[in-house]
Length: 382
Image (cartoon, rainbow, N blue to C red; front, side, top):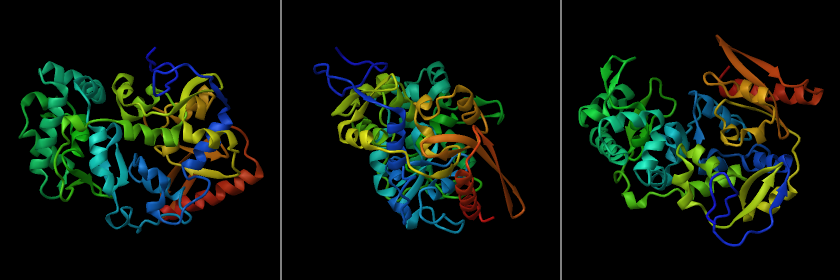
C-alpha cells in the first residue's frame, strides 16, 4: 500500500515492520547536537548546517545563528562568505539562505519544480495570478529565470532587477502591485527564479543588492529537477519527519516530494506522532542525552525551522508566543527545551536584551544566558 503524507514514510512499499518508539527528549537531544549547538566549531565553513542552508530573516539574524555554532562569535567585520566559499541566495521558500558556493548548481536543480503542480504550490497565494494569465506555472519560472540571467550582468538593486526583468517577460507574469502602484514581476516568482537564473545576494548589503554568479550555466533542465538530496539533508537535521514536514520546509506539498523520498527510512513514533528517520541516525537518537547548555537563537534559526513545532515546543501558548505572523522573537534554549523568548533593542552602541521566560530560570541558566547575551552583543558590535 503506497504510503501517504499523513502516514509513516518508509521510503519503499515493502512489508510493514515494527515501529520504533522514541521520546521527544531523545529526538531533540540528537537534533541540537547535529545542529551544532552543543559542540561549537572553530571555522565558519565547518558549520554543518550549511549543507542545507542558514536563513537570514530578518537581515542580520544569520550572524547570530552562525555565532551560536562557532567557538568565537562572528564579529561585524568578519566575511560571512568565508572568502567566497559561501554564498547568500534566495533558495528554500524564496527566503535568503547562506549556502556552500560549490553546491549552488545542485541546489538550483533541487529547488526547480518537478511539474506545474509543484511550481504552483511553491508560489503559494501568487499561483492564482499565473492561472488567471493562462501561463503554465513551470513555464513562468523558466521565463523569469531566463530574464534574470539576461539582465543580471552587473550588480543591481532588487528594484532595478525587478524593473529589468519585468521589461522582458509577458504581462501576465507582471501583475499590478497595489503597494508599489506599478506592474512588476510577482515577488515570489522573482525570488524562486533568482538562483536558477544565476542571482546571488550581496552579503550584508543594505539596501538589497543582487549580483551574477560567475560562470552560471543557466536554469536547470526540467529533467534534472528532484528533491531527493534536499530531503536527505532535511532529514539529517530534522529527523524524524513526514512527507508533509519535508514539503513544508521546501515550500511545496507532499505530493511533490513523495516521488523523491529517500530510501532507507525507518518507521518511528515520537510520543504518538508517526514519522520516519534515516536508518543511519536511529542508534544515535536512542543514545542521545540532553546537553547542559544555554543558547540564544534568532527568529529564523535553523532549529526553529523544523515543521514539527509541537515536538520542539509542546505548549500551544508558548508556540504562539514564539512563532508569530509578523515580528517573531528569538528563542532561549536550555538543554533541549525552549524556555523563553528574547528581543534585542539597540540604543546607540548599547544593546538591551529582554527575555520573557516560559518558566523561572535557574541560577545556572541565568549565568549561561548572560554569556550568550555577551556573544550577541559582540556579533552586533555593541
